[in-house]
Image 1 (tube, helix red, strand yellow):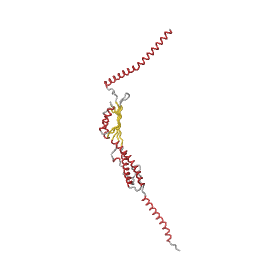
Image 2 (spheres, helix red, strand yellow):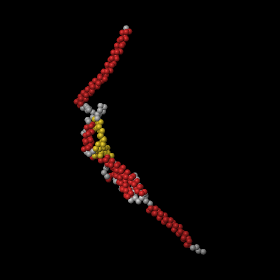
Image 3 (cartoon, one colour):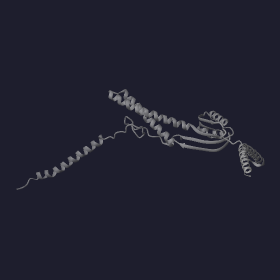
Image 4 (cartoon, one colour):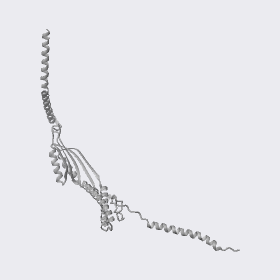
Length: 287
C-alpha cells in the first residue's frame, strides 16, 4: 500500500508558513511603533534655553561667546592723602560730571580734635574714561593705595539674551493662543501661563539692564584722607623746623604739667605744714 506524499508536504510547509506570518506581524508592529513614537517637548517653564517652545519647535541656539563683543565690568578702589578732604571731594565730583559720570555715594567728615577730616565717594564713570579719571585724581594729593579689577561677564550676557528671547517668543505664542481660545478653560490656562512667563521675562530683563549698566559705567570707590599738617623732615632745614616744633611742644607740655601739679603742691605743702606744727606743739608740751 502506497502512502500519499501530500499530507507530509503540508506538515512540512505549515510550520514555515506560521513562522513567516509571525515575522511579518512582528515587523509590522515594530514599524508602527517607530512611526507613532515622538518625544514630548520640554515645556517652557523656567526659561532654560535648552527647552523647546509652546509649539514644539526648537529655540534658537545660543550664540557663541567668541562671536559677540566682550562684556567687561571694571572696578577701581583708590585712597589719596589730601590737605583738605572737603575741597578734594568737590573736585572729584566735578571731574566725574565732566565725563558724563555720576556720584552714587558721597560722605564728608570734618576734622575734629581727636581725628583728621576725611571724605568717601562712589563714582560711576564711562568705562573708557576710567584710566583717565584715575590719572586726573592723582593730582589731588598723594596716592597711598590703588586697586583695579576686571570681570568678564560675556557668558552671563549671552545666556540672559538667549533666555529673554526664549521667553519673549513664549509670551507672544501664549498671546496668540489666548486670542484663539475656544473655551473658558483654555483661556484661563493660557492667562495663567502668560502671567508666569511675563514675570520671568521682566526679571531677566531687569538683570540684563543691571549688567549693561555695570559694563557701561565703571565704579570708582574713592577715599580721601587728610594729610598731617607737618610733613616729615627733609634735610637740615626740615630737621631744624621739626626740632623747633618739638621744643615748643615740650615747653607747652611742661607748662601744662606745672599748672596741673601746682594745686597738688599747695595742698601737700599745707598739709605738711599742719603736721609739722602739730608735731612741734606736742614736743613742747612734753618737754
